[in-house]
Length: 90
Length: 454
Image 1 (cartoon, chains in turn cyan, blue):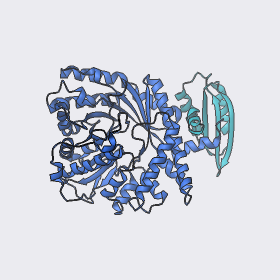
Image 2: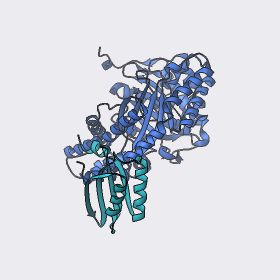
Image 3: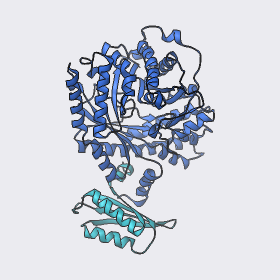
Image 4: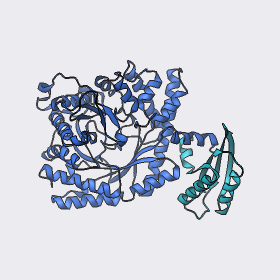
């Protein structure tokens, strides 16, 4: 399994999760966990996904999601999980 | 499983607190390039470095992309060139040819700097080492990426005062040779005592002879992250303060460790060390002086500054050591003046002097760094400054260094602009009394009594 963290931050609007999830489904990316909050009026979501079955290269995935975010008006970041694991787990 | 708060914390550090991996530095041994024919030697050096580093920049960028952490610099360090060029170089011009070869390969592979135009002369100088040292002004004025360092002393050997005197002259000549660029050459020249073999940070990086054929060393930074963390513990006890710094240093170092391991795997080169140094940048908030002020000083340089810095340096090391099994290089807090907006402000406010900075170097990770002094400072005075720093390093068994820039044509209070990460600095006053008779003595200062541990 290759775990990747996708974070979405921006102004709340209709269909943010739907659009991101559709993209993930179309690219064989399984969602393992989603959490979401509204922080001082801003939509704040984190997804843990498994990217081991997608045919896309990591850089393509990151670019596509970032472009999709721009369409919706939110910032989407795609990062490998290890950076968070190494920082927050002993 | 990782939660949203942890993810947000990491990304806040990167986006708002300037957390970055400051450098991936590949150290490369050039010992097997040595031959007595200069042209052949140049070819050997170029080919060996190019072979190892052709993918260094692309790999660094790929890792930065995948983890979402900026990797600011990709650099190369090599075996001290005085050793490599010893048999082929018969003149200073021959050594400059090697500097140009290093410069060319650095430009071709796209790295920011290449370090190792160096000589290790802590006890004595071979003729080749003296030639290399005398060629430094020419080499730094005719190249862009080359960085130079000279180790003039150690706790085990004492201080080579002949080399110290020579370096006083070389620093001044380098300033003169690059005077049309505010004496920028001196920003790429460091004089060390107790230089480490595995330092990834410029300008003092070189690949020690104790190292493997090639190695990946990573330097992480993050004064902004420590500063942010300390904002939440104002007025708390020293215990809380120290815990906060340690925890933050741990987190930062873990990112460095991850990047180092990943770079090592992708480039097929063994991992050496992570150097956790709070290395400031001119960006607002990315400042060691700001941290000292948050610890409780009105301005850096006020009484208490040395104690606050000692505490900071030690906690950074303690957090870092827990986070990686191989912490090395310089690790601690850097206090360069021109690269730290808080330091610049303190100098301009009259709070921070050269003498206070010297005291601070007793407890920080390196030494007098990126300090602009008047252009008419004499070589003997520069040698005296170097001797003082080397003595601090020798006696305290720590690395110390001097990177001062006598800015030709400028005087106290005027500003000097170096550009980029090197920043800008106000020219600081230097004690005007002479040490000519002291530094003119020949020979070396013996090693201190506590060096005899056998």
